[in-house]
Image (cartoon, rainbow, N blue to C red; front, side, top):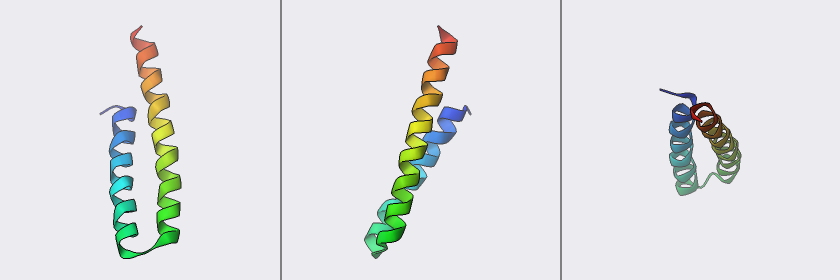
Length: 56
């Protein structure tokens, strides 16, 4: 599994955690998980760009 794939899987896990925290009413947890999700999505995008550059 590539780094990009691992980051996408982590983003999916974080997204589910955000929804669970939102459902149970944990606003601070929602905020923190959302910030982590943004970071992971950005890292996944960079990893994908790096993979595309290697293939060219």
